[in-house]
Image: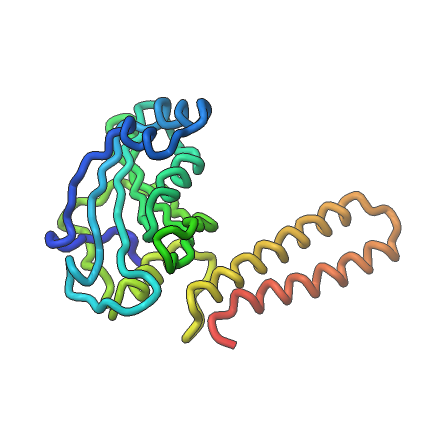
Length: 231
């Protein structure tokens, strides 16, 4: 599934976000401010995807989805997640972050999208969950970009933009929140597997090794069940 999308011209904002303006709203710690200074060259609020800006319905849990382009400074290979979380903490709606970096003469892009719980009231605290990220890719040429997938509303579009970043496929009729719960359970099972594998490497007693292998087998089966698309 592609990650390289062409966004409709009707959604374009192309607004530069000065870091000083973000600092005023964030009141960042010294350490967070230094991350912005040292790692971020420029932030562009590139697109607003909504029923008002494109041919899409207004229903669902999310009424808007935004696209931010973040250019990293020369010599910076990765962006600290704290920077993304700080930006997302200011915005009620989901944000697709497109990072760019220079490696020699080549430009690479990477995509980050967090699970963000729907905010019912504007005063409610914005809840930013786990981030899902892509690998780094060579920056695609404009003619090789794909149209956005067909979606009835922003919630469906959010789901489809998340899909390529997830460790498994959405199940039929599975909500975003249900899928996130499955991701958390998968990570929990994987941590338990890693712990048992380390125990197995250190274990000397034959009978205990048999027991640990039996436990590992059960956990691996549970892990595979979590990855199954449809039950």
